[in-house]
Image 1 (cartoon, helix red, strand yellow):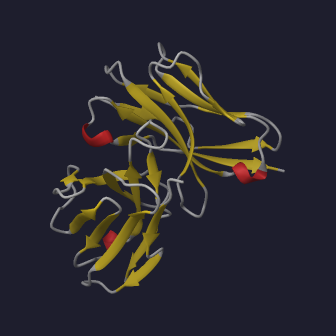
Image 2: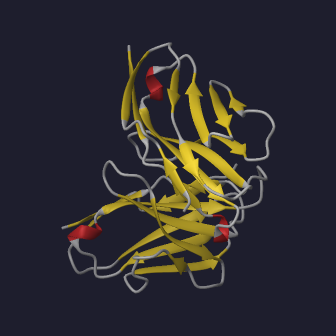
Length: 118
Length: 116
């Protein structure tokens, strides 16, 4: 149980285009989903927190107009990188949180999406 | 300020030996949760172990145990009987009670390489 999927796993795009990444909780309803960015050899940095049906809360320094987050249902959140540039190339990881099944409000992570902007 | 520190950027360990990964934190909150994750080269984040700040006993999960010293604000991960498959990045993370939305703050990570 507690499986989170991400799609696509890898994407290469041209500078100036937009890329959408999906995050799905497959066997539980996620009250909250998180989006992280990880540059090579660095730690995970939280970009934003999203709750179903409400606007995402962005961390300081993250442009909300560039990184559009939609949390349309309890099992799906999407991150759209708009007008991507090479400096947006990174590993994007989502996680989903629920009071169940462990009771720890544990975050379950997706496998990540590697974005390369040419 | 709430901060997580992993002071070991990388370490080698001999197969079958134990290894301790350091994690210290700084918070004034009495209630918090501690997590350790493993990240192999594939990039997925694998949950290893959890410790609540009010838990009386140190958490254990198979070969993983957490040496929780609350007064010293440390939560070191001990991996016993290391295996080649343990080679990966390891992240300590904390959830602070006052953090809105159940957010996690991650340490900088420690890269472990198990030698045969």
